[in-house]
Amino acid sequence: MLQTFNLSPIKDKITNHLALSLIFINSLLFLEKIKSLKSVNNSSLISSFRWVALAEGISYLFLLLVAMPLKYLAQIPEAVLWTGWVHGLLFMLYVLGALLIKKPANLTWIQLGLVLLGSILPFGPFVVDANILKGKG
Image (cartoon, rainbow, N blue to C red):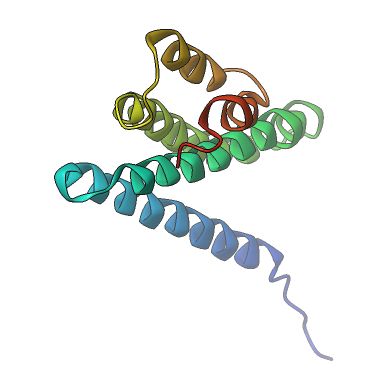
């Protein structure tokens, strides 16, 4: 009689590690651009921020709409553990990036405030991208 193994938990861990690795690599590339701001053109910096904003917005929605219900309705707290960690990293990159693109994107202080406010509202990064950053990078 053949014994079968449940590989689903292993597959899920590998998938999580790959996703975290990709986010970490993208974060390192973004930070590398920050370190050499003098050699980065404005549109490249703004474009990188827009990608971080997109990822942050998706991670926030995933955290609110998938991970939190899994934690509280299905008693799976691990969903929030990984999703929260990824979202936290992306949130910090979003705030740092918003401060760095103020001058290259010619943002007023009010627009910068709206960009920062967008990071704490569901769908906020998408609204910011469509209304404030569109055409700037």
